[in-house]
Image (cartoon, rainbow, N blue to C red; front, side, top):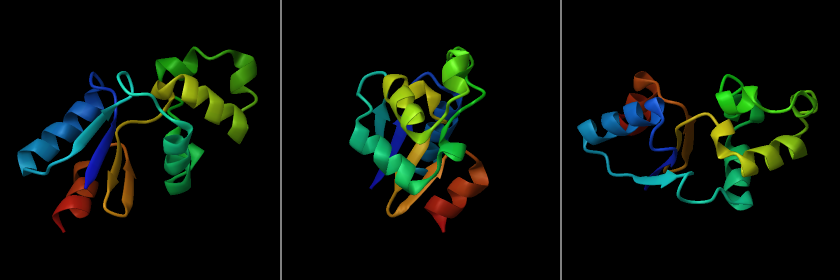
Length: 115
C-alpha cells in the first residue's frame, strides 16, 4: 500500500504522482487541503523522519511565520504550527510498505518502488 501526502497543486507532488502513474504504481492521495492533518498522522511523520527533513523552511508559509515563532522552533511549537498549516511540510510525503520518503527524486523512487 502506498500513500502520497501533499497538496494537489504542488509541482513536486505533480512530478511524483506523474512518475508513479507512468510506472503503473497504485497509490492513495491524501490532500492536506481537503483532509485534515491529524496529530496522529503528524506523529507518524515525525517518528519516520525528523523536523530538519520535514519542515520546509523555503516555503512561503514558513517565510510568512512571525519572527518570534521562527526564533522559537521547539518540537512543540513546530508541531502546533504544522498542524495549523500543513503546507509547512516538504512534499510529497510517501508511505510505502514499511518505508517513508520525503520529497521527489527519481532515483530514490526507482529504488523504493522498482527494486
